[in-house]
Amino acid sequence: MNDKTRQAQAVRPDSSLGTRERIVRTTSRLMQRQGYEGTAIKQISREAGVALSSVYHFFPSGKQELAVEAVRHADQEFAGILREALAGEDDPADAMIACTRILATHLRDSDWLDGCPITATALETAGRVPEIQQAVTRSFEHWRGLVTEHLRHTGIAENDVLDLAHTVINTLEGAELAAQVSRSDKPLEIAGRHLARLINTYR
Image (cartoon, rainbow, N blue to C red):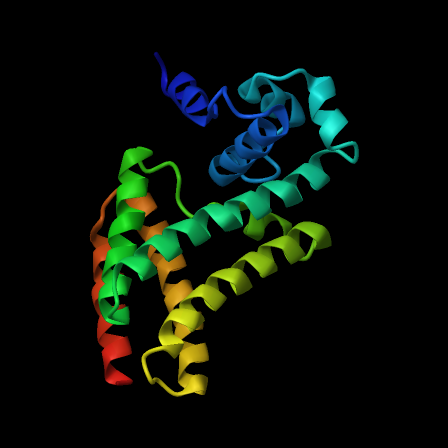
């Protein structure tokens, strides 16, 4: 089995899901790995195991409409990882380390294929496809909001909380990309340690 076949098989979602959900999840994973431009409607239908007509039935406006929904799905997927890490640790510094460990585990389990679910799409569509760019912007806002809410319970000043939330998400994004490129946990491990130290300086 070649690499392309393995990657294609890994994209296919649970067959027990409804047709629309399979289409969205397949699109989200393909865009995560290939970007928006590199993902074709025909490939989506093939990997989702549905007829091309079914894709257009649920998304009559085509690929752009589907991409926006796929970004929303990716938003919820990454938010779930953040919630898991933040809920598992009362101390926000420990939560940063936990989060980077969880991200590293997800990367290793995907053989370093599945980094941030929206990075490739965000870079390709910025300034060119407003609807997708807006969906991406809302995703980052959502993730920062989750971190903000967690930090608000620590007694850190509100202005600092907002700045820290930006820094946390920016750092996680960069560290995840570096880990994916290097096929190593180290960038995420370092990011987790330093985010923990940073948060502790504000308390």
